[in-house]
Image 1 (tube, rainbow, N blue to C red):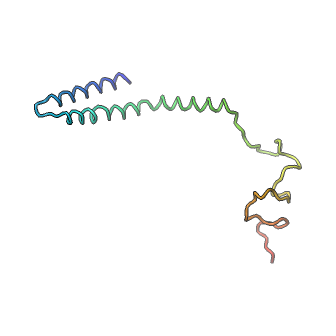
Image 2: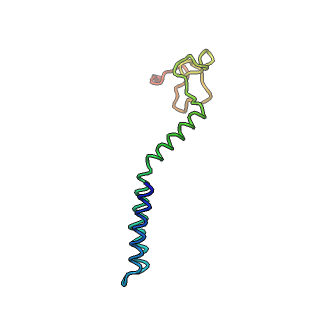
Image 3: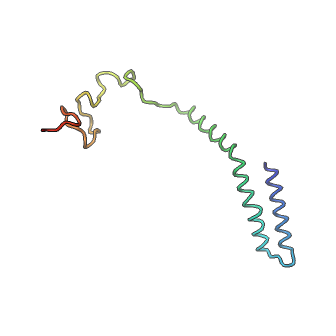
Length: 116
């Protein structure tokens, strides 16, 4: 891949040199020729063709990070370390530390029940 990019930049450089040394050519025209015909397309093609390598490197980095730090998952059932009578749930009738929010029903009433 790099050989093709180097060859393309060489061709663009020769085009820019021909533009600069032509009888009615200018250095500004040579610079524009090199940037628009050489650097810009080479950068785009290099970025697109390098995508698989970047994807593999990102996957390897994520794999290393996952292996280095163990995943902490919440328990799916009541068999985990928080199971038992000390566990505070909304259905147990106990109020927590105010984490229920302002719209929580008072103890003894359901969410949809009213005074009437």
